[in-house]
Image (cartoon, rainbow, N blue to C red; front, side, top):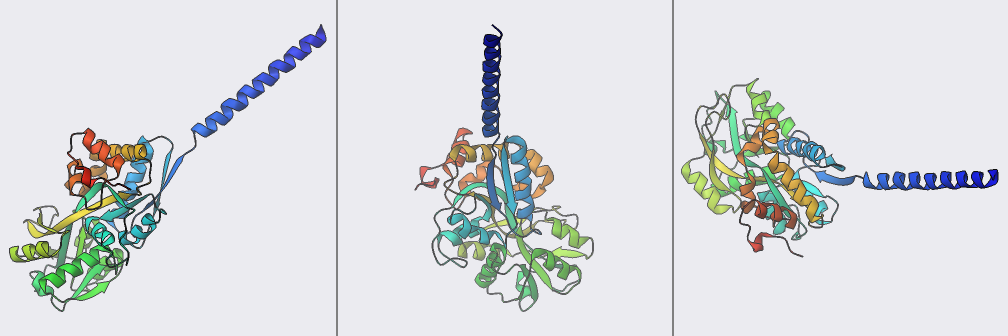
Length: 328
């Protein structure tokens, strides 16, 4: 009798152990994280900060997601790794997409394994110099020492293209954005031109040390730049975007974006895009330059849209033509 009771107890204990192990392993599998890599740019750039902010936002609202943010030499450095499938997400730009898809500058091959997800900000080509400088406009940058950012970056490439179209020949200074800002603070350069969302914290930082002013483009320069470059269009930095800027500043503009690897799961990309736009007000509080874009700007992307992103945009009523969606 006792032996039967003992056997029953042993059997019960064995069943409990099996059940516990089953739930334990099942729980571990359920808790396994989705891990993504995200290329950005150098740590002194707006796009690096924005991508880091997106990473934290995604991890807060999507359970079991982990996004590793990687500093890179610039957003153009993200295209080839993404094309090879080595990056899941990346900071990008309309101009960079144009170059990548046409095999220009940083690649000899036309890159096709790249898709757009969303617009990060409107990049304004911001040209500024010292308040007491005799330089009054873009044409006055002829033969002047002008900081352009990192050599080969989308920003420096775009600005160099604009100068070429306008027939202006400055003496370019290439460096990281952080180094360029220090040069302006120390008056080791005559001016700086950088394409980025506004307000840009680096400009505000310079303004605490030096009195500076923006250099406007003439209407003729805006038209010439936009006509000559498919990724540019006339725009302006609205008055009072910065405390020292009481008037609109005419310039040209383009989009800074976030791209995705085409093979990334469609449902996951749908969730990533959905979180960004449903919590965009929170993102703008931390990154004010993000205020210049909305979900509607999806129709202006240069690279084809990831199918998961297109699904979200269509779901909220944005008309996305089939030709804009990536296909194998």
